[in-house]
Amino acid sequence: MKEINIKYGDHSRQFEETVSVFDAIKAFDRKASKKALAAKVNGEETDLDREIPASGEEVSIEPILPDTVDGLELLRHSTAHLLAAAILDLYPGTKLGVGPALMEDPRYGFYYDIIAPELLSEDDLPKIEKRMQQMAKRNLKYRREIVGKEKILEIFKDRDEPLKCELIDEKVEGDASIYYIDDSPFIDFCLGPHVPHTGKLKAFKLLAISGAYWKGDAERDQMQRIYGTAFFSQE
Image (cartoon, rainbow, N blue to C red; front, side, top):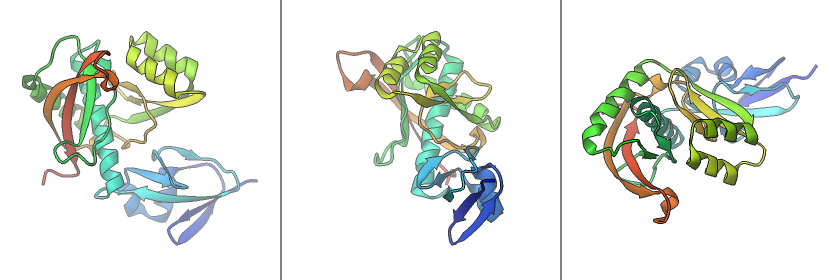
């Protein structure tokens, strides 16, 4: 019978069956498991609910914790997706572009490029932010699914998301990950990871809205870029 030998800092132990990343961290450090946003498994960032199979090999785990650079980037990336979920909820039919975390920009922490059914302005930002706050309080789970390229394209074609389909055609060869925010209209093609649920997002602010072009090409679709920032506390 194969086991898993998991290394956590200077400690290691064996597990006799498949174990989630969260449960593995909890077995070593219950305090860290409560704080963890995600983890690095053999150096690769991954969600806490990802399962580690019993392969007979040694696996190293390091939690990604708040108040670290990796943790802040993860927080901001997850908040960008919360922004997209709120926009889809308020403005059905919105087409999504990309929504990265920004770590070098002194003004902003993330943005999301969108094409909404109506032209948005900075007057709309408080309403969108309020919806984000409402969704954050509901502790909605970020859920990952691995699917094949044809299935991913089918999903986004059915959602009338041509820009996402373009990215999938360019970047996916075999299987890839898509993410849902449960009980919301949000689905995205994304490598992840994300925080476990929206309740981890407590301090964010939408700051500005501007024009943008798809892939920065003035010959392509004109979009709107919504900027925001996020931290671990309001202080």
